[in-house]
Every structure is written in C-alpha cells, then in structure tokens.
Image 1 (cartoon, rainbow, N blue to C red):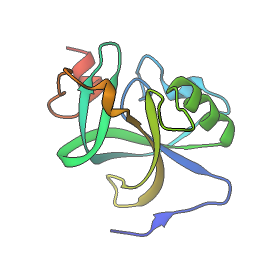
Image 2 (cartoon, helix red, strand yellow):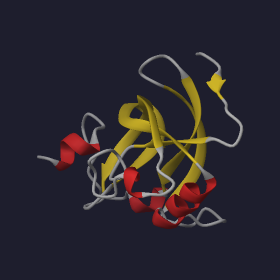
Image 3 (cartoon, one colour):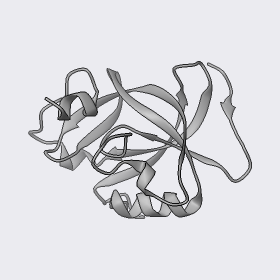
Image 4 (cartoon, one colour):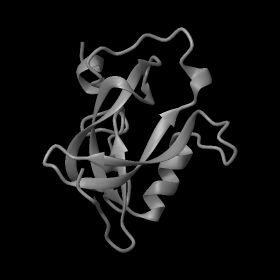
Amino acid sequence: MPQPTHAPGVRHVFVYGTLRAGGRNDIARFAPLPRRVADAEVAGTLYDLGAYPGMVLGGEGRVKGEIYAIDAQVEAALDRLEEVADDDSGEYIKRWLCVQASDGRAFDCLVYEIHPSRIEGRAVIAGGDWIAHSRR
C-alpha cells in the first residue's frame, strides 16, 4: 500500500453515510468547506440504523465512501454530530485508519465507527453503499 498523504494542518475524513455528497447531512454544509479529494472503500460492515447507517470496521465486506480534507473546526462539528464521547461510550467511536483511495493514493483518515451496542438486531446493508441503499 502507498504511504499516506500528509499535509501540515490538514486532516482527512472518510465519510460513508449521510455525510456523503447528496446525503441528508452532506459534508458540504459545514464551514470552512471540506474539500473532496477521492472516492474510496474500506473493509467493514455497514448496518441500517433507520435514518442513517453505522459501520463496523474490518472483516470481508467493503463500505463505499468519500475522503475529504477538513480542518479542526469541521472535525469538532463532526464529533458533535456523531455523538463522540471521550470514553468511547458515545454513539460513534472516533478511529484513525489508513484508507487507500480509488486512484491508489493513501490517506490517514478519521473514521466514525458505530458503537457495537448500537447494531444489535440491525440489518446489514448488502453492497456497503448507504447512498444506493437509501434511494431504494
């Protein structure tokens, strides 16, 4: 795998649900405006939580998403939206993952993984694509 891309002061986030382009919480609504840098997939399982999905990292499945360059202000807003808690007891757990983009570049990305307690009894989204699933 290529070495991750690093730029001073720039963070990247991999979004896979309502934050994707065209989603209910499209990341483009945040300021300063996040910059889309690539499409990507990660190893994981996507669950249908009703109005939004949750992903558990790892395993054989693939989850489709997008990588954005963001600043600290947007990261803080995403932490609030995803209900991240310092002790990992919130709805989502903040993770860092090296994500390989569709074009082969690699990025160290912030990823919001659903807390394991939230997926009990929830359906897996076949194909790992929330946007396609939510349009059905």
